[in-house]
Image 1 (cartoon, rainbow, N blue to C red):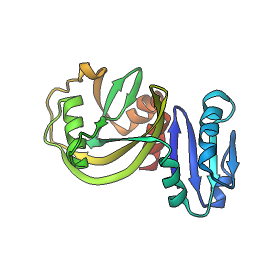
Image 2: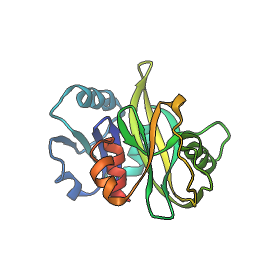
Image 3: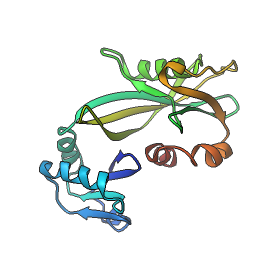
Image 4: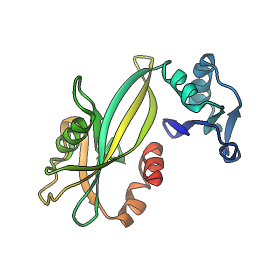
Length: 202
């Protein structure tokens, strides 16, 4: 299964019949054509009651690859960072709690980009990648062109106990370590649908 978010709505690609039965407030389609992509984007952008569109197809990887070819792809990388106290690092930007991440620079390794972005956005050091996590996808428009952003996530750990400093020039207002309870009570109450889905998945 693949999920692609467009604001708080989503496009799902699956070959599992059970997923079709779990699509409230949405549309399920048993076919895919590249020509239908702009229609789907328009429906999700303008029809308030439609929360998701599901494509029920046989070859999910093949269809998702064709879907991706419609967009300009931008790749980013970031981390779910754990402290010695098992707290998780969050940033506050644009009125939402989020996880630290950013664009991969040309020629940069994905893992290096993930560590660099966390370091830059939070002023944290001593980061070590534990394992890769599932990727996330979301759609936005830049100069009226459709962009598909793929974010590579990694679980990280650090012994860092210094002061966290938000990267103000990137619009980050605050950086906090959250306990699991605070993630539920604070972060998940005010975050992006893609981040909430990702945290639920892991």
